[in-house]
Length: 129
Image 1 (cartoon, rainbow, N blue to C red):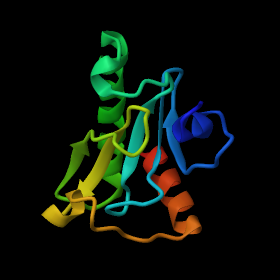
Image 2 (cartoon, rainbow, N blue to C red):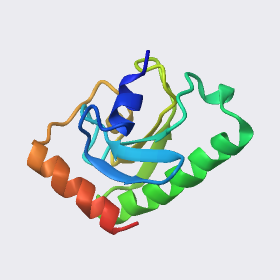
Image 3 (tube, helix red, strand yellow):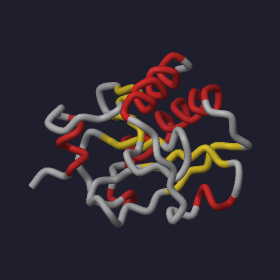
Image 4 (cartoon, rainbow, N blue to C red):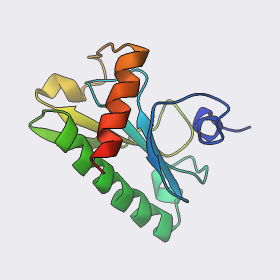
């Protein structure tokens, strides 16, 4: 059965897409720790990070770096943190989180943005790629 992320990639579920290429897809997290919390995923559905083939593993981090650079240009923060946890969705995903305080990285602190704010933010980050 396809993961929720595979359904997002296929357009079956809407997302606030930032960018994509032939192998990867980046979109805003719908339950963000901080404004700009972004997920980067491979289009190939693989459950665990270390089960990715080497080229996809390296490509995911190269793609994530580009998105993180655009995120830092868009959302004021001290740094962009990276986390790979993957317990909620059985599809590899990298969390890019603008950090100003440690609580931004805890996954217990959440922020709320409207759909319009998410759409605008996704467009602003994409413009900085």
